Length: 483
Ligand SMILES: [Zn+2]
Image (cartoon, rainbow, N blue to C red; front, side):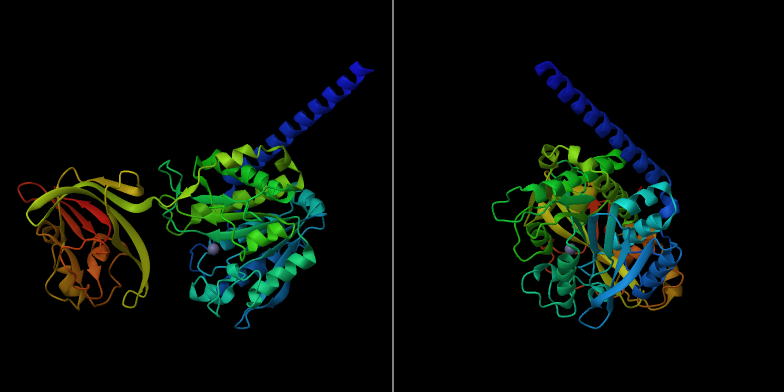
């Protein structure tokens, strides 16, 4: 009898294991297919972070129209300024999933990926048929339309919606709370963007995606609800790492009693936070958008088929923490002279976007945000200063107002003479975006600063050798090597 019982238990475990392996393989095959054929799912019309709100909804409506009834859209309320907020629904299954994007108006990556997900779900593949029977998916794309239109984090009341889960003074927060109460989702996906200067622990890699199963109390205890979210995080991490490598970090898990993620977890919905960070050569975050898309489809499939259950929660604690150690550019080992003394520094340089009225577009301003020993930091680009002497670049003395004047300048000669910046207030039609000339131009006079001060100075710099010859120019963050 005992032997029979043992045999049955063993067989049962074997079947479970085989099932887990099988479904794991199906998941990876699915991910492979999504990765290879992403161009078929990507909604190309929205491909910049600052997309137009109306255009977004036009595209969304087209996807829904073509979905042959797979998708439906319903108004769930209005923003503070009266902009309608919608939820899109897919499927009629028992497992309920709620997703929302862009509750912070300047965090658009997931909103783009949500379109790709909906395009995928609108197709008549066998997998979408299967998902339709197993899950009910509710998506609120752009929860904060007022903030989105201004590309600002907060809503029109200047309240951070993600600190309003308790007081509920924002209409957007109220909508989210009401959806949680009405739908009672089993799972939720809270979709954000984070600064691009986060890294995957101390690994030297940027945190392209950071994941979190938010805590529901100060002690950060783990109950069944949070454990399910943790396991889904592990599933997502595995998918991204399979195609991209170790670009996934774990977001800070300090309890925030006013945040929605933490409260959803408390209210009984297994909640996963996905933060889109930075990645190489991805200023418009289109590669990270793809990572989001892969994560969404695989997580949904993994939830529908309970694949996440076999994931090891220890894997979650092994994900390196989000660390703020990343710059856009590091210049290492520069010599510097002050008060007749020479010493060694590294420079950390970061970009920030500002709207340029004359260019009629956003441009990056690169500034020195840290200096000293930065040997523990990382960057998208690194220049070894090789003990060359660092100096501030000079500003060309004449303010130019006509393109014909600009065209006559010999940029190479200017750089060799130590000029890294030209003040120009003319037309920009003929100037190529992000070219050396574009980088050299400032349309406003740069503030006069104490020459001693490097911190917060614009990254217009020179590196000279001992003979005084300029070897490198840094032109608004762009490294130019001179022969
Ligand atoms: Zn956010």
